Image 1 (cartoon, helix red, strand yellow):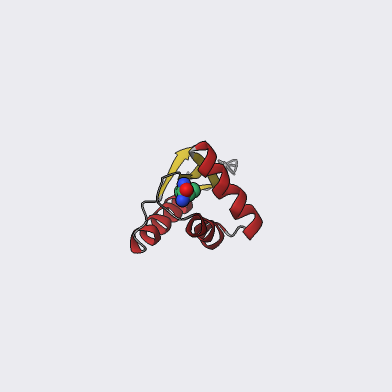
Image 2 (cartoon, helix red, strand yellow):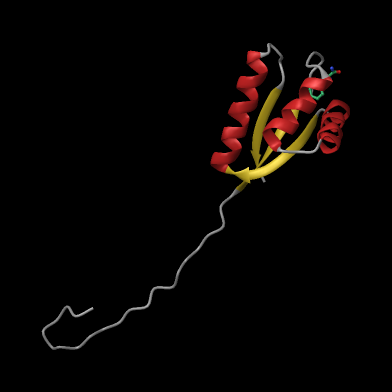
Length: 102
Ligand code: NFA
């Protein structure tokens, strides 16, 4: 900086302030109608899980009513929810996908 006329140069250091983004869990909810195989496929396709992990997640949701598919920043979580809800709707299954702040 050299604002004045005195010819004095002032150097101001601003600390690089970085903040971690808030994280959101993406959850699947159980229902009585969506086929187990469809839920496994959704978890594989949209959350990039192995068939084994996808099956574990599906069974957890089936037995406990709700289960986590992944943790993401807000925009990514929102995109996952929209993709899963659109895909379920397209196939006429009532599967519900939601996000919650960690
Ligand atoms: N409860 C469903 C059934 O018995 C399977 C399911 C699991 C649905 C997980 C939604 C989520 N066909």
